[in-house]
Amino acid sequence: MPYEWTPPPPHDTSDWQLSLWPYRSLLRRDFVLFIGATAMIVSLPLITVLGTAVLWGLLPFFLLMLWGLWTALNVSYKRGEVLEELSVDETTAHLTRHNPKGPPQEWEANRHWVTVHLHPKGGPVDNYITLRGGDREVEIGAFLDAEERLALYDELKRSLRDGARQGP
Image (cartoon, rainbow, N blue to C red; front, top):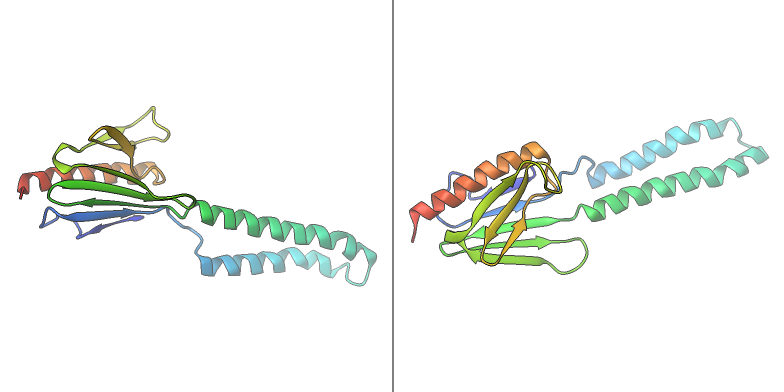
C-alpha cells in the first residue's frame, strides 16, 4: 500500500503518524531503461533507410516522438510528487499536504472531535475519504485507488477511535 503508519497499527500509544503518497509503477531507474528500449525498438525500421534522404525525413519525427514521451513521463512524475502526512498526538490531529507546486496545505483540529467520513459515491472519486474537525472538512488519500481508500478508512477510523479511548 502506498501509505505507512508510524508506529504500525495497532498503536500502543496515542501518538502516531500516517504518510500517504501516490503509487509509482515506473521508478526513475526504470524510466531511463524504458526510454532507451523504446528508442532502440522504434529505430529498427530506420536501419532500412540508412544512407538515403528518407532517413532525414523520418528522423525529426522519431526525435519528436522520443521528446514527447520523455516530456509526458516527466510531467506525470511531477504531478505525482504529492505527500500527505497526518500526525496525531494526545490533543491534536494535524494534516499537511505537500504539493508539487505551491506551499504546503495544512489543517489542524482537536483530535477528540475529528471524525472520518466515507463517501462511497458522489465525491470526486469512489470511496472518497474526508476528515471533519474544527471549522472545516478536508480530503485525505484521494490519489489512492478505491480499494486502498476503503482499507485506509477502516484503519483511520480504528486508529482515531482507539487513541481517543486511551486518553492522556
